[in-house]
Picture 1 (cartoon, rainbow, N blue to C red):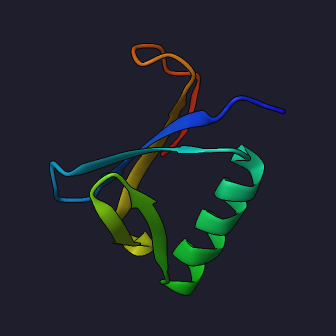
Picture 2 (tube, rainbow, N blue to C red):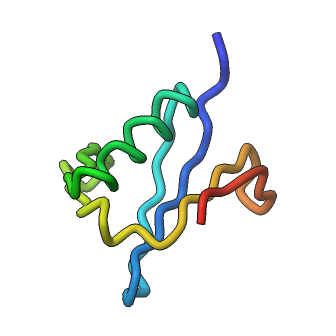
Length: 75
């Protein structure tokens, strides 16, 4: 089974960033692209609880395997 991929989402006009892991990058990016197009909300759960991000406010998405090494991103 593939190792979970770290994801960092930053929002437009905000210093807020959300970090979490996904199992399938292709599935995740396809879901985000549809939500951006449809002005939907991306929901995920982390150690602080359930979080919803207005997909239309996403500024960038970064994927990395190591904490300090960026592999790819969607801007």
